[in-house]
Each structure stands twice: as C-alpha cells, then as structure tokens.
Length: 305
Image (cartoon, rainbow, N blue to C red; front, side, top):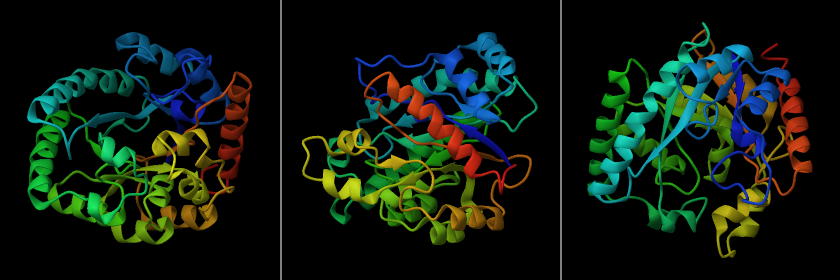
C-alpha cells in the first residue's frame, strides 16, 4: 500500500475563502513530500500543471499521482447538464495519464462523484426522504456506465467516491449504488461518519467492492450543530468537521487494522489517501495544516512505515 495526501488537506479546494492566500502547486507538492507522503491527489485541473509540466512536478518531488476529483450530475441535473459535465470529465483524462508517467507507483484512479444539488447541500448527513427514486437510479446507472466506459477507454480504472451532500452519501445509498453498476468505490471513513455509517464495520461488508481508500477523521458534533445554519454544508467545513486523525469519532487504530485485514488496497497497486478537508481562515492556518498532515503521517507509521 502506498500513502498519499491531497490539496484539500491544505485548504486548496472549491470552498476556499477568496481572501486567503493558499499554496500553489509546486509548494503543495513539496509540503506533501516533506511530510512523508508518496503521492498526491490532483486537485483542481491545472493546479499541479498539465502534460509534461505535471509529470515533471511530480517527478521533481518524488510523488506519484493517486487520483483526482471528477464530479458529474449523476443523481440530478438535466441530460444537457450531464453531457456538459461529461465532456469536461473527458478533457481531464490526459492529466491522469501524465500523472501515471511520473513514477512506477500505482496508477491514479479518476475519482468519480455525484455533484449533488441544493437539496442535498442543505442537508449534509442525508435523509430517507432525499433519496433517489427507482427511475432516478436507472438514469444514474446509465450515466455511470457512460462515464466509466469513457474513463476505461483511456486505459484508466475509475473509482466512485461516496460524499457528503450528494446522492451517494448514506450507507443505504452506497448499497444501492453498488447494485446499479460495476464501478467500485472509494471508501472514505470521514464522509461515512458524516453520512451516518460506521466505518470499522461497514468496510468489511463492502471490502470486495472497494478499490481506493480515503482516510479521514470527523467530529460528528459539528454536523449536528450546523443543521440550522443558512448554508449547512459550508458551515460544517468552516467549523472543521474533519479533524486530525485521532481527534474525532473515528477509531483510527481499529480502522487501520480493518483496512489491512480486509485485503483492499494492501498490495502494490493500492493507494491510501489521507485527507483533512479544511477551509483556511488566514495564512497562519497554512502552517497549521502543514503540521496536521505531518502528524497524520506519523500516526500511521505503525501500518505504513
């Protein structure tokens, strides 16, 4: 198993504040390498460069590309909106190929996800009445098949990320997702906590359908406190629902033992990506994020030296 980190752990993602100075691609890669990780996620297209620039940046920092976020309106959205997103996703595939050329480490997995909508963004954690109907799952399946076929046509293998405030969030939605297609999932311990799951037990029943792992810890009390906010999704991120490993509701030791015992991603072909999504409030938070990721890496030395 190889271990990676991601730009989102350093505050670099779409919920970032406009008034905060964030590290660029070269600095991010350097920080991730210096913290002891072997790989990095892609972040926004172009953040780490494109083509040979991307390959050289990764090589320069002794990093592999682990994966990268590719969200589309699988569960909601018109056919026209889906086709626009599909074309954008297709244009991202050369980035993964360039990343794969940087090292002999495991190939990156384009990390598909549902885009969600306003209903789901207003209800992180999910609810039975927000779940898709049968006809919507049929449409989801058709869209997933189209995207997976496109990704595979580039010689890449997709993975699908269950995620807060989307139509694949709760354990029951993950179960249904696994019934409607052949794409395996990115198991994300933090998002599963937000979605009402129990990571150390749920991983065992999904083990045969997991091909990628995101390890994060979460403080569920932040979710409960944010439910009456004007923008609950942004509120939980701003209040740091995702915390350093061992400071939230995840039993990290039991989680890592379960990951290693399950057989998923434990051979040379697997990535475990440590994530701690944060919205940085000021430049001092960049140093805090860097320290958190060093601590997260050290916390896992027992399993991944």
